[in-house]
Length: 98
Image (cartoon, rainbow, N blue to C red; front, side, top):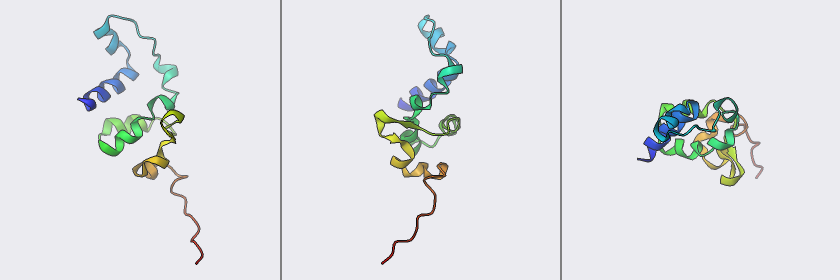
């Protein structure tokens, strides 16, 4: 059920009329401005580690960085599977000296 909710949420974020059709209420979410606010979708980062779905990956790729201070900040630091997308996270570290 959770994945159905996420799929619908991502579609509705791009087309609020999907929600209007169900609720009969005009939506205030404006994709033109809200889709520029990646912090609202930072929850996608942990979800991507649990559910490998192209729709989730494609949606998350629209944002340079998935980060939200309310859920721990920069998500690629918390969820290692995402590090491959983050050039800062894959920088080579100097070898430790013995």
